[in-house]
Length: 154
Image (cartoon, rainbow, N blue to C red; front, side, top):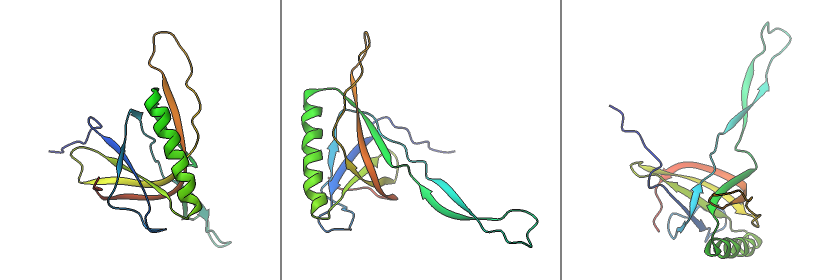
């Protein structure tokens, strides 16, 4: 019998590298008010490896592409706007020093967390519709995918 993992109670954390090029394992902070975190479908580019004697095209794996833009959907609150602005400013300072921002997805019941590095960008604005929760898209430029590894400590 499989024990399926759900997103109920899932959390998103972030931490900056203390040593350039080394993903942190401790010191993560929770990103609050997340309605949706970006999915990573590592699509595969294939390379045609055929030659003139082949009667069918042969492919070899090329690069995987996580997509260049990853967007969170956050609840629209004054605290979220202030926290994201601080995160963007801190990321700019750290990136100038060669230190990236790492994200961790932690799912209750999962043994490991999912890690990726990405630089947060300035917020845009939500749309307006009647009788709806206002949410804000928060975009990041994807730098690296680490994948599944031991959960971080906060």
